[in-house]
Length: 367
Image 1 (cartoon, one colour):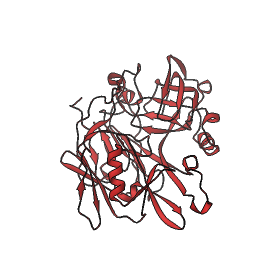
Image 2: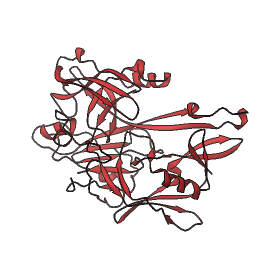
Image 3: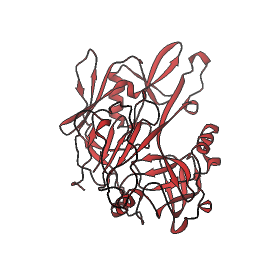
Image 4: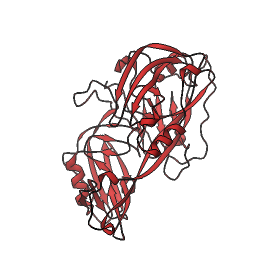
């Protein structure tokens, strides 16, 4: 696996024009680009709050979570459904059970994303496999079917959910396909290459920023859109499975984590050298507890046990610095702070949990 490289961009460029999906042909493979939509949800951390003596002392913490979606047209006639793009898994599946999605808001979101019914498609056929996938939160039971999809084309195998729990949208897994992760069938990206839609197994993802309107992100298959980043692409070898897993993900070596804070000398934390993987399907960044505790302390924070997060001043200036080989990614602290309100004081909550996963604001691409 060391021969594979994962380049990542320094900063997403803010541009007004989107690449238009190219017209499908079987003669000239190239690059297929689709808009990425941000589904931003705000909800309170009520379940994590401890009982307070007075309402004036209780934290009001509205958690903002973002899911990145693309729209697929499946079957004949076509049925539109939005699915989350997920670099942490390999399979496409659709049609979650909205009745088991969770809250009322999640149920509404589930229904708004659209549904696919193979019985309403003249080109669908049942595939020989069934399956079950467990995620960090939620689980889905699948019957695999074959049908036409706007990308990559005809006779593509994917999962049709017969039941699911705590999932309000389907998922397009973009990790390694059949040849590496032994899915038992060619994945969507595998089929793009096999059906001559794209020339190479290359993928680029620009998630978009908070300041841009939804749909300003972009996912490219078969290449990258150079208008969506500034500076140079930097590469890192992709590592094999970690932590006893058999599944290949986009693991790379993180050489260090540091902090650059206004008015203080930059510092690098000890024991911050470990593998991480890039996961567009997650909301939080996950780092070892010792690193999170050091960051919280150096930012003048205190641990709020009611939400298990560090409370820091909202106006804290600086960057958290992630070093990959000879390249350092400096991410503004504002990207990692949720704003809350306690006793009329503006405070922020650090959005880190202990583990070894990184998500946006990195823009990533894979060769």
